[in-house]
Image (cartoon, rainbow, N blue to C red; front, top):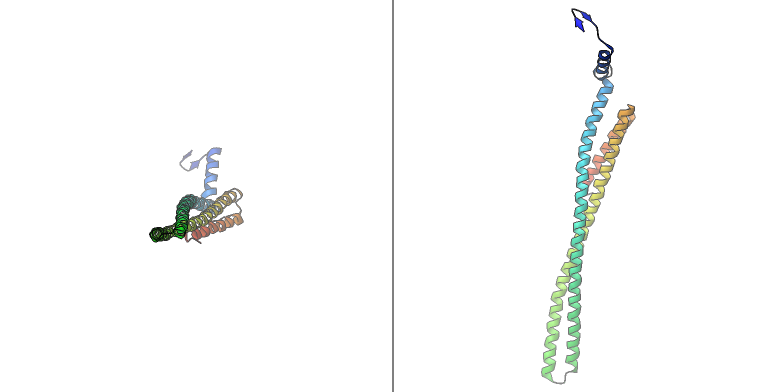
Length: 198
């Protein structure tokens, strides 16, 4: 206790004073390093969480787009089956026309042949359009998976950065602090690549 210039403190007070001087006084460099690493780690962890969310979102989108592609492929397959059934009917109508002995029968079967030919052309247009849509959905799915991999790579590098930060804090090694900053910059660079679809 202190009173009129006379100051007495116990061992506990001495330790508190020494710890306070270590953080603010003589150990200023170490305290500054701790504060910098703590702040950097908090920022990197927040960015990493956002990148992790984006990675999950792009993976989900890739799955949805692949599903849409499969649906369009099935619809196109159905159209091609329908096209094939019209081709079969057209062939039978052509055979009936060729075997017919009367002109009115030949004309009746020829009109069926003409109708099936027109229907086949219409079906083919629909099937080709569905196949093009399936290809487009596949392409979108592939793009989303590529972007997902970029987000995952970025998140992984940022997690390594956080691990380096923890080791740097424990060991107080300056080179580990520099490695942490390099890893953080690398993770942000890969995240920027994901944002730009590279």
